[in-house]
Length: 156
Image 1 (cartoon, rainbow, N blue to C red):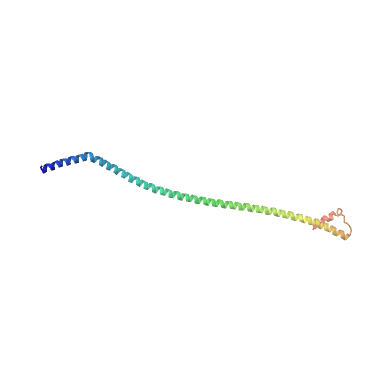
Image 2: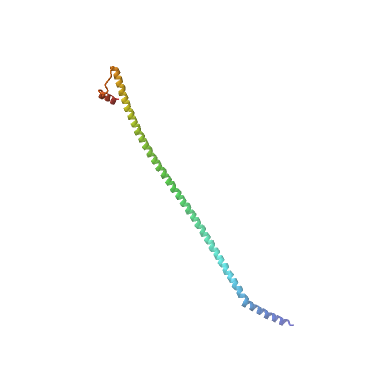
């Protein structure tokens, strides 16, 4: 056998093999590689979008938390104002009630004092009558001397 013929046969076989690979094997491999490259690029783009969406969500969450804290603080301030208003209203009502009770007590004291004064006048008039009776040693007619006794009681 001749080495040249073997080499020529191997070269023809290799050429047919290369043609076969380029025609039937290489296109599916290239297509699979391109599909994989597309999937990887899509995955990377989705990862970047996800990262961006995560940043936006974190920013929104931070904003919502800040807004919630601000609203809570505002509600606390409003509740404190309402508390102060209620306390002031209760104090005002209590003062008014205390003034009313004081006035009522003062009026009752004045009535009791007037009643006691009238009772004392009556008792003094009776004592004066008893004293005058003893002085005169006779009985003084109360009906006859009513005007004098009333004047005496009024002076007391």
